[in-house]
Amino acid sequence: MAGDEIQKKFESYAGARDQFSLREFRDSCSPGKDLTSLLISILPTLSRLSLGWRGSARDYRIFRILPKQHVILPDSPARILTAQVGTGPALAGLQDLTEQYIEYKTGKSWNDPLVLQRIRSAVMQQKWQYWKEGEPRRIGYRKGYAVIAYLAYHAPVYFSQFQHAFLMLIKDGLIPNHARILDVGSGPGVVSLAISACAREIPEFSAELFALERSEEFLESYRFLVNRFTAGEPRITTYPAISGDLRDADTLRLPSALDLIVMQNVTNELVQESPKKRAEYLKSLSLLLAKGGCMIIIEPAELRNATELRQTVQAATGHGLQIHSPCTCIWQPRCAAERCWSFIEKPPIQPTRLMNALAGKREAFRFLNTDIKFSYAVLVNDERKRHCYIVNKDSSFSRLSSLKGRLGRQVNVAGALMSGDIGNKGTHVFLICDGTSRQPVYVVLPHFHLSLENRELLSLPYSSIFEISGALVRFNQKHGAWNLFLTRDSRVTPISRASL
Image 1: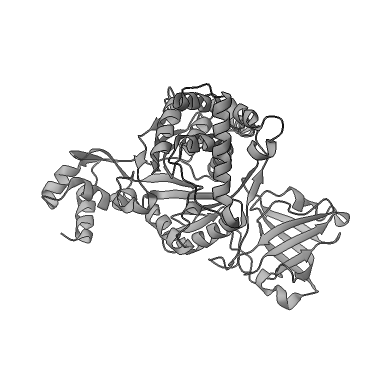
Image 2: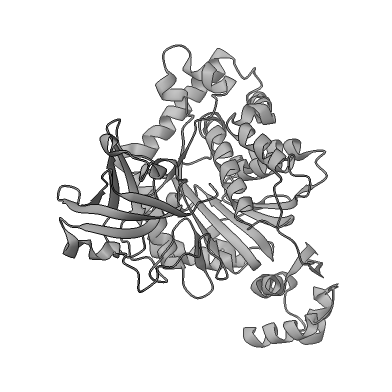
């Protein structure tokens, strides 16, 4: 029986049933077909019909997932969570668990001088691999100390980084009160740990957490950390992490009808794959989303990673998958930018005991990793956008793609704020985008031109929409970028403030 015919028969069979046996369906419609192969082939159909599954190769129970409401974050938990995110893993208890894992793996105290020296060596080795010859490289995590080094140097930042991202998704109305979440390339479980820590402060929220990881060393650390961290949390259900590669997702028993798929620091490690090929993996995984589900892809803020993320997302969007944020194409459906170095920066976290022990008194620059800067994209399988602002065709605003014809003149423009302040003490500089320009455009506000008319620019959150009137157009030949210079008479008007 052909695949399309099986899908049609399955939809008809599922009908109004709340739950049923996949074996019963198989025996009535496609006798003899391997149950696991059948399950994998219909995962997109299960997701589209809001059906989940449980069981093993002997039989799978198919069940209907009830409609959900978006979780609402009250003011008090929001304030508590915002304060906790800035502390890093220390307050949430993850610091203690990390030290316990080191002792479990090494048989020595976490701060034993020999253990610390081996962690230092592993951290330096990973840095060398990453920046070898000036080009980012994939780092392997096959040995115990490589994972311990990751936990010591990277995990604290990635933990807080995803807490920021998760709170953003909640504020954007993208997370239901009971969420089914898959972390792809989970590593030691940073995403699951961050979600669980947030859930402790959100009374109406619960989650089922799934993970996919190919490294056995990471899988071991995931089981140790996540199982202990979530023990006794009745609103968090964790499932055994799936051993596998995201490039083989079409052959794996992955969960269906997901509300959120997370890929944090994953696509940049596919160093042999083009952005177009990486986009194919995103589109394949997106078929596991329930109606109204979303994906978030997070990458480091470095130039190559950030620009390749935008290229990958551009290639992934189209029929069935659209950009929700942070980008806002206010003139047309798709962004025209070919190179876009855009990232968000949040306040640094507090260093952990382990970081301080590794750094000692002289090597803070090597082993204290506390800065939070990252690029991200949120994709949805419907038409939702963070901002619904569209420029009126009869307005006086100029497209950023038309600045060449306005060189040396004043213009009115509208766009999204796509960077923090990347200027210096004397001049404020921000990246702006309206989805039309193939070259970067920056808003430049000299400090001596600050006024009541334009100072709102300095307080806008990343990805906010704003309008500018009276900006002088100039071109930076050295960097191939357009500059919009503001004077004291230039006006900045916020339209929609972002949630992050």
